[in-house]
Image (tube, rainbow, N blue to C red; front, side, top):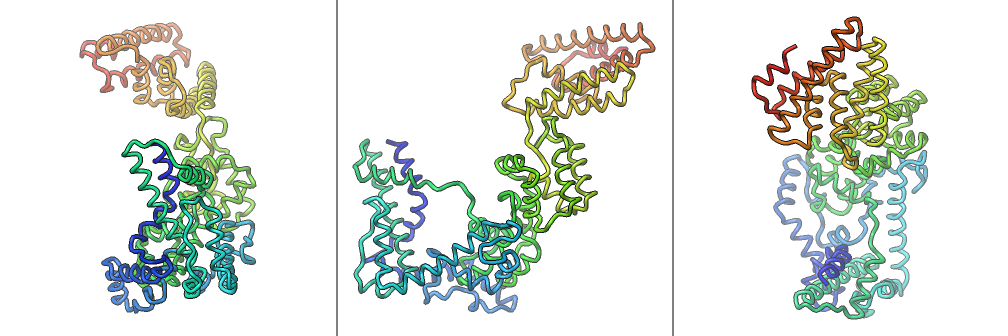
Length: 536
């Protein structure tokens, strides 16, 4: 029962936010709607946050009355519960983004920003639908009947009288439906919580109907463009609730123009300086410019990166153009694909690229003409990268180790070192892959690879880790014996083969590994044993 109530509460959460403002309802919802809207508006306008804002407006030479909500015209109702007047609002400050981005309403240039097109289409359709509804004598009642036909019995609302409906319009009817739905959902949630406390485990048929209805209508996880824009405005310090619907809409339009052109999720959302200036002009006060581009500095989510990694070359170029807001040249298109393919086959990817990998990617992009900001954005959004794979990294690391050993036996020490370093880079991906089981042998091999790559501290860590079965003094003794035994073997081989580059290199590498292990704080050896190991 507990889990059932939790589930039902979750299903009703989208409705409960409407219920919070319903406690003052008296008589019918329609009679109380305007009073509720006015009271809510006045409370917001008189809040400390808004009065402080209006004070800043005055100090900046602005007239707050021109930007604040007019509480007598149902402004707060429109802003809170129904679609804002984005068409008129965008005409003030942000409508240029529509003209610049679209050939016609909802038709994207170069297939860009489809979500913005859909949003604008939706607003236009909503406005048109409301006008048509208002012109129909039966339109308002049909809205209520249509709602009641599509919800469970416990969420249905009572039909108001014709006299009440005559005093309102379709937008307010829709707002009232949402308010009433929220109130009923709130009451239902409380009733089920009481059942749980009283240990009543059964649901009535009507309650079961609500549960089943809620399960069918669970919303998807697609990020809302409008919510993203409003969140970005909040981040830079804009308090939309303190503005009239039209002024707020103008600022949201500016923000939508920015977030709607970003291809890879919230991680890339940022506000450019030009947008910030427009928003600040509408707001009537200065805003926090330091936070405007914070989105561009945030690494994309795992889901965003996975999506980016699976893009085809054509899709990758299209996504990059949407993100950067411009068309790529042929050279830039080739560079983007080349940068994406850096470290391909190594198992290294997002979160496990080596410093060399990242430098190579950045250099390719820079040579093609991408600016520093553009290079950073493409890398952080994953458009020039791939997913990492522990299994592929393990295979590659072993392959490069064998290649390095072959090069070393041929006396090619520099080439061998580079191969060992590439093997070590991929071994880090193996270590960091939580899905892969790592044995003591794996860590021992990692120690050898890193030592030959001249990464001695890392080699020491892995060498000590390769003795996981021993603890305390027995572990220290086992490590001491292993290092000593191998030192003696390699010293003998090097003395017998003075002209062998590989023999000399292996002995000197092992001595440096010994030095790193002895100085590692994880290992406790007596001074006598340390001296013995460090002796040539």
